[in-house]
Image (cartoon, rainbow, N blue to C red; front, side, top):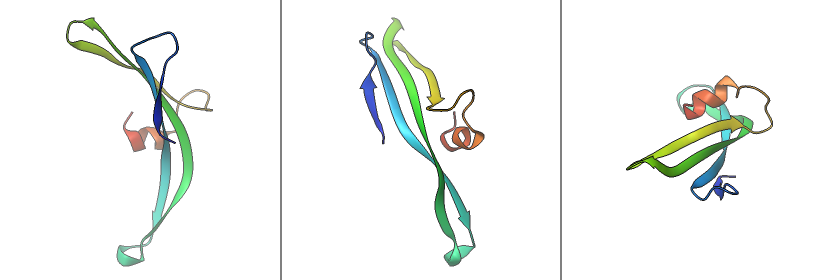
Length: 81
């Protein structure tokens, strides 16, 4: 489920979240079939406050929900983190 939420206590900060799909395909040409192999929920915190005139701060952090440590490589490759 994709969407965004206000970050509590910070008026200019939003959390954006989406599911990233790991798709596996096999076959060739018209015989090619693809299926969703894995789904990973990802959340990114974005700060829109202006510290330097005309330049918002931007993405503060992004992480895979429910995963300790790094996101799997397939997630990073799918969304270009």
